Length: 76
Image (cartoon, rainbow, N blue to C red):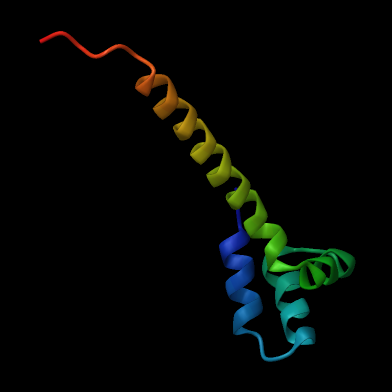
């Protein structure tokens, strides 16, 4: 199960990094090292996955458009 949204919400709701770390450990059963690694992670790394997917979909759509444009016109 994907908990990224809940993890981000937990971090955003915390007033200090220590509080965020403690909450991550308590709520998600992370180790101290895991919680610290999450806090040090840049959000860009999370969004990069989605950006890549969008670019791939865009490139696939452009290829489809080009293939469709290359088809002869339909005879009505």
